[in-house]
Length: 196
Image (cartoon, rainbow, N blue to C red; front, side, top):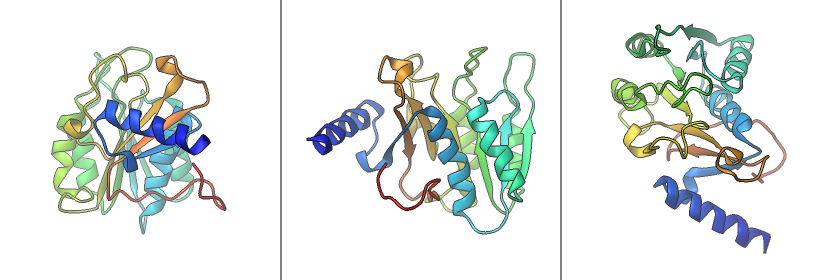
């Protein structure tokens, strides 16, 4: 019975997001989803990664980015302009200049409401992304504040990973979702169990 409820929830979420059911991983909330996106992508590769993010990301993105830096990876935090938008050209250039990179830029800011053009960033990085000619750059977005407020066309944006939280839509606290595009490798944060 529990499996049926979980499968039905995954089916509804996949239909709402326009993605395949196997591309969704349930988490304990947006924080875990963002942690898994950033650290999972960094740890899944070989050799050091350059982690690129913005100064106005949620702490659930900045925290794992700093953790990755303590683990020996390079962290670059890009500032924003007066409108609260990051320099996406700089982010793309710095990602493309690294042997391997994980880029994390939020879809909608939780405090000032800016919505960077994620699709443009994805297009700038497209030749180096998993399943798109290369596997050097992974693009993650924190879409917790976006869902239900602006369109969230995951395939249209072209992101590899996207984090969501149920309580932002009136769902249960302690429930989140991570979209992981097919072919994107993630190292789990927890070991010893296969459950979500």
